[in-house]
Length: 297
Image 1 (spheres, rainbow, N blue to C red):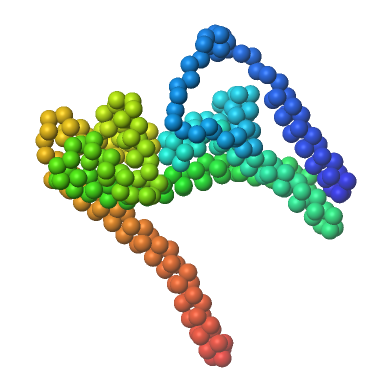
Image 2: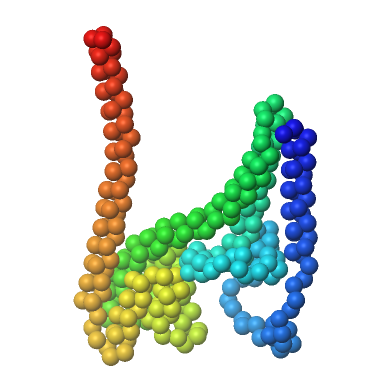
């Protein structure tokens, strides 16, 4: 395969991608339910948040793709992970499109560069390589999102143990359940305490019970420890039961779970380190034994 043929193949791949993008920009047929919903007046709820800044290119691209591409392309979005990290599905879809486009174009570009220095490249290599690498890059944002969400949940659980201790101390001092929750959330300045404080203070305007708000937050971000805390505070808020001992016991359980998780992670890291160390020892042993064996032979 000559360099000219490879360049023509790369150009055809790029042009085909541009044609698909142009076809996707054609407005899709509007569903009857969506058309009727547009005719109804929209009521915007007032919030105390500042106006949202202009979305970046990644989010705008994701919004466009979400409106024009079929839903089967995206699969089931990780809503709980996105909620925990404060991201939207549009930003995830935009990052997936950008990542897949880079993967689609990288292999043909490398193939052209390889042909320009005189090395032969077979035609199926750039075609199959670009498709395979694009598919790999398509799922890379999902893996990155899951990893960040896992680390965020670990950090949330670690901070939640301190929050439960503070709530127990506030209850011991005679504060009511709503007062104990809000005062405990105001003691920290991390993103976990700020999120808890914002959730609890919002109940002062909406009239929702604070333990119900915590339960909803725990369910939305997949954090069972927060749901358990909400159940304990619901018991203390409904019949006035003293929940100091229950809170201290729950905090101790959370600390033990966090400690066990850290010990397991440390053991796994130690096992991974043992493999290259064993390899180095084996190489050193071979360098000492092989010369002696050669002299004997």
